[in-house]
Amino acid sequence: MWWHKFFNRTSASKALILMYHRVDTLPCDPWQLAVSAENFEQQLAEICQYWRPISLPELRRDIAARSVKDRSVVLTFDDGYIDNFVQAKPLLEKYKVPATFFIATRHCESQAPFWWDELQTILVDAPKLPDLLQIPIGNELLTADLSSETVLTPLLREKQKTWAACVNTPTERCSIYEKIWQRLKTMSAEEQQVQMARLREWAVLPNEIPATLRCMTPDHLHALASNSLFTIGSHTMNHPALGERPAREQATEISGGNQYLHQQMGSPVKVFAYPYGNYNETSVTLVREEGLSTAVTTEEGAVTSQTNPLRLNRFQVCNWDKPTFGKKLDAWYSRS
Image (cartoon, rainbow, N blue to C red):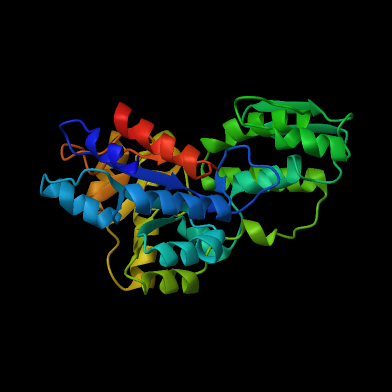
């Protein structure tokens, strides 16, 4: 029976912070970032039935007061994809569940796709590619023979649906994507764009950006902020791996993203998410100095009254139905 969940507790009250990215159905989702609208609604129903949904600012206040309420659940969304507004927002409003949206501000302003999405569009999703890839990345010449996969056949497309990044590589297209992804992740935004320009030139593809890869605009952010259920948070300007970048660049990214949102929203932003969950002590210090009182990581673990509010753990949610999601929540709560 449902009530057994409320009596199987440890002595310390614990909260869970959930990490989402996209609410959409994708033909190929190697990073498991997307939850379908159908499953997202089932997950919200599970949370409302057995848990205590609260906002991230409320959890921060509970930590400060040393009174985290047991079985609290916080929903967060990283990056700012347009489907957060189109698909997630109406369902969150329907179930009256608070959520925080962390925005990479340059993409909000420019509507340029994230480099990892464009990389997938070029290497994995392109209908036709040249036989040979040779591209200089740093001091390395990366080479890939794509002669057997130049055309994206139905069979190749089906293989790529099984792709789980860094777990299995069903095609050479997926393999070269991962190699380039690993190298670009630690670069500056400028360096990443140089590499992407080389790849675009090599692939000879149209410059059209798939609508599904766009981010929310400032108007979308204003609409979210007008609802007390929703909180806007900072995710830097360009989504760099902060821990891999010099202190000055980190400071520019953190303050630039924060100030942009302050200007757009008309009030200070207090919550932050480390891009990729990548940070170091310098990152934490800069976040604190910027006046951000709350920051979330991608490290798994429950939150208690003793948790450092600038290193809050989260659990990534995948495309699970209600029963599977419920078991995941219980397992996360029990093990933490």
